[in-house]
Length: 119
Image 1 (cartoon, rainbow, N blue to C red):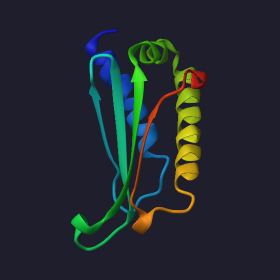
Image 2: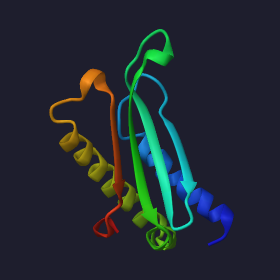
Image 3: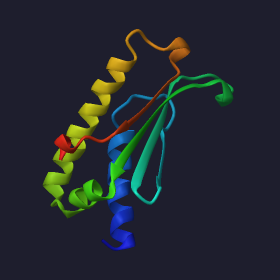
C-alpha cells in the first residue's frame, strides 16, 4: 500500500471515530505508526468551560496491527463503511462498559487492541 493510500484510509477511520461521540467542541484525532502497530486516537470534550484548559476530555486510543490495516485498506468502499460502523459501535460499547459508574468529572481514557472479529 502506498503512503498516500495509507494516509487516506487512516483519515477515514479518524473521521468515523470523531463522529461517534457528542462533543461541545471539535474532537481531536491523531495517528502514529509504531512500526509493528498503527495507533489511532480520538479525544473529545465531555464537559466544557470558558477556559479550555479546564475542559474534561475523554480519549480512546486504538491499536491496529499492520495486517489488520492492510485488510481494511483492501476492502471496497461499502465494506470499509460497514467496518467503520462496527468499529464505532464496538468503541461505544467498550467506553460504556468502562465508564459504569461514570468517571470523576467526565475524564476518561481507554486503550484497546482492535479485535480481528470486527473485520
